[in-house]
Image (tube, rainbow, N blue to C red; front, side, top):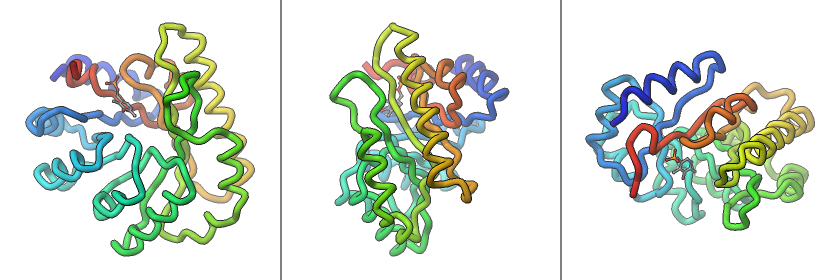
Length: 221
Ligand SMILES: *Cc1c(COP(=O)(O)O)cnc(C)c1O
């Protein structure tokens, strides 16, 4: 556990009022507890099974963020406790999250994952798919989810200006969509972007959540 990095990142986030999500995927429970004991409450996992297992063993006031790709048939496992799902990339998935949230008597906060990277392998909605989903009117029928903003992952590159362009583009899209579809609601206000390698750039472009793993927990090998 790198507490120097932890403190430095918290100091860097402060002027932006952004929140740190400590990405604990593949890391053991004791590592999570160490950070928890330093006051960290938001943790991110990318696999359903791993998150469910950790949630059952660790303190109940941990806020769990699902940041990895989610299959509809696995929503039921996280619906009882998840704080936010960052990786929503279809209407079908939203509908299933709504259904499972209703069963659990909850409202689940979601982010739509937008494809901003040059790589083709990354998940996420293209802007035209996003408009398609928002234009159907179906979303208005979903009473047990809230769309709270967007998540995006920049291209894995040393080209800083490319990363800069991708985050800036996501912020522009966020502002457009907020104005067009979400102006009356206060909860559409989150941009989840930035990881260990690029979170300072993301902060400059309006990130409200940064998802940092290896700078805190060390390399995953
Ligand atoms: C693993 C992961 C991160 C954290 O990556 P680091 O480079 O370790 O900071 C952030 N977001 C997502 C979606 C991830 O899967």
